[in-house]
Image 1 (tube, one colour):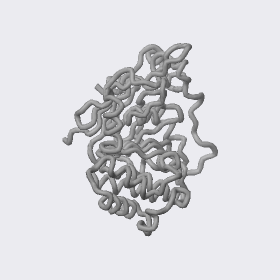
Image 2 (cartoon, helix red, strand yellow; image 1 turned 180 degrees about the horizontal axis):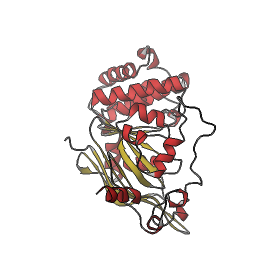
Image 3 (cartoon, helix red, strand yellow; image 1 turned 90 degrees about the vertical axis):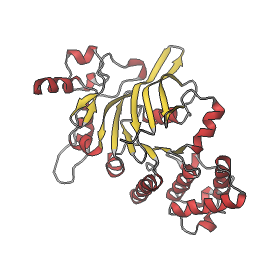
Image 4 (cartoon, one colour; image 1 turned 135 degrees about the vertical axis):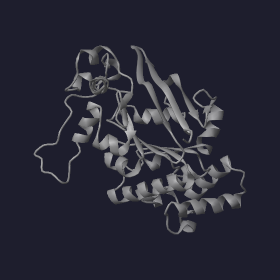
Length: 327
């Protein structure tokens, strides 16, 4: 077995407020191997993007990592000083965000931004950095890269800007790429191209990819494994096909049931009643218990940890009960 490139252990993120401390991530643990794509999915507010921000050291104050560890290639990175983390970000960790306009400076040409990033992290001359930048633009599918090198972000379409951001993320050949909703603002046809590009980059460069999204279609097409998040915790994690076709957690079952099937007629889509709890009102026990049709007394008092349920691991007491019945 290849040792994991990224290890997240019992990650806890807090936001101190005047009314008390809000726990946004509570005991999140997972790992990603080199060359693997891990999808992170869930409703808005589940903690997906916050997990990515904690990994790359870009938590917005007053947010803070209050517990747990983040290890990259065996080295702990969550406690590094700001300057060391800044040097690591870009060189060892690349980031792709939802809106490319927030990642690109409108006052500089894309070529200048690429060359600046490359020379910050790699010992290359101006000429070598320019050649690498043009090669990256070509590698990410941008036509006439020599011409595009001299253009500004506003001269690119949304899909092309996202390709530039991917080129920036790859500029220093990072080991880990954190992609936060990289296809959300794009047309479906462009989404498919970006997904294909991410998969190829992962395969050719051997990078580990953490793909944050709410789109199960993107997850099914791109990822090797998927982690389903709910209220700042991982509800279920496992191989994509298993989670999609044989989910063990009731929340995952509800998510999969809400996806329209092309081969059957249905008057109404399934829905999960209720809403995700506010950070100030997360219930005791399993956070999903007020919305779960199968909840029983233990669910309301004890928090379940991830436990094996077939090929996946789910934080659900029903998984333990079913194993006891089979035994």
